Image (cartoon, rainbow, N blue to C red; front, side, top):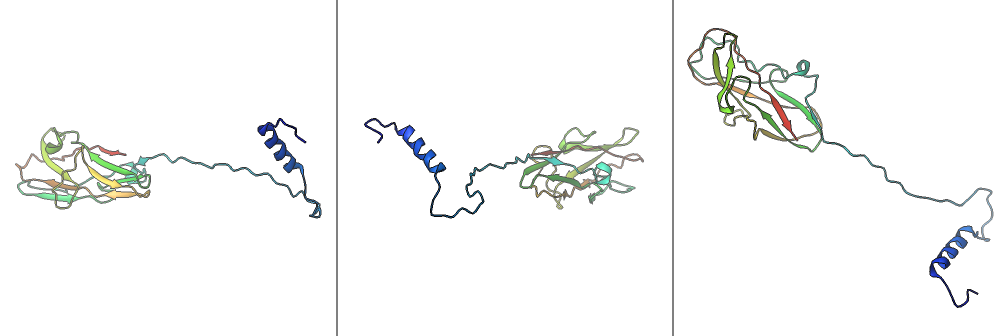
Length: 182
């Protein structure tokens, strides 16, 4: 019927079209169109990595890590943060590997020489640590490594004033910048 010359592409299309338009005579007509055509579609969403410092924490900042009031700095004095009082609070994409870094502050010359300063310009040495034993200086290179869980997380900051000459009376402070690398 097709003769000696058969084009396989045309034949395959012809057979496919023939099968689409043919109906089976052994089934009764239900009055409903029983033929269907389907095609799949991909549903997709890309989640971008993010980190944030929640604005709900202490009015948008971490609060103050406060050593209290001292009459002498001739001995060690230490403190540790709490949420809203110096702790680093953040939220990042779940599973994200992050580093939380701290710089030397506004008055320090290096990470190992952090200083608070009074309004009169007098200075007081102090240090920030990432561990309760105060053996790991919280720096701006290595910092603290964390795997984010997608929820609000907090890290405790441990502060220490080493023995030094007691400076003039006044309020001493410094401002440290916290950076999250992700």
